[in-house]
Image 1 (cartoon, rainbow, N blue to C red):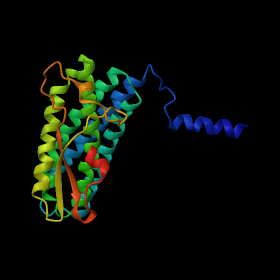
Image 2: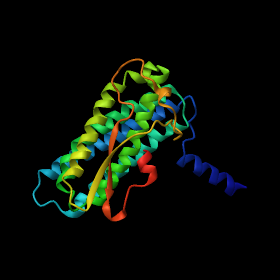
Image 3: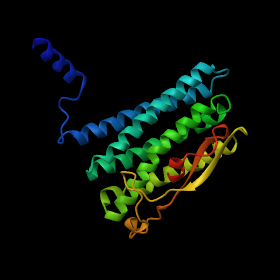
Image 4: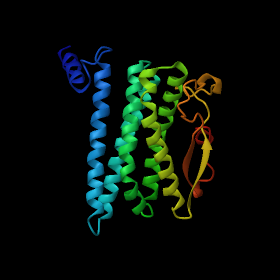
Length: 234
């Protein structure tokens, strides 16, 4: 019995014993802020490595892996909106998601330089981040349809960041080696649970010029054949 009690205490120490509906928003915001701070530090490291001659391959790979981890965290945080219906949470996902993408844009020159040697890592990194941008797009569409001004006020800046991300990805893959290609596809209208919905559900009455069917470049390795059906739908 004593051993069981000790195990429970250890689990509490490694978990979030004070996390509850009343504190969730603060916890969620802090995680976004910390992840963004980590990304900004990585951006600084990337810029310092760019200025050095003869950067070791191991250093480049380590930076790419850290960028991947940061992108994974963003995807996990944004995906929480699938189970959290609080408008404030969705607003933070849109706001900090846009800021993350904006900071990530600063490493594209670095990705371009090392693409030939690390194309698999970089393509995986871009595809991972696209998971978050697609969900953010859905959040924006739903917010417009429901006229949730707390969220819609954050859409323009986030939209600009995601559009720049789209074109930088397109440019990156356009100059890639012949074994890598990409295609552009319109996103289907889907809700947060991934169900296809009518475009009428997201009618834009506010005319804020956010595309309902933005095109996204999807990186694919020709050796693996065509893109999956899931990617085509997304």
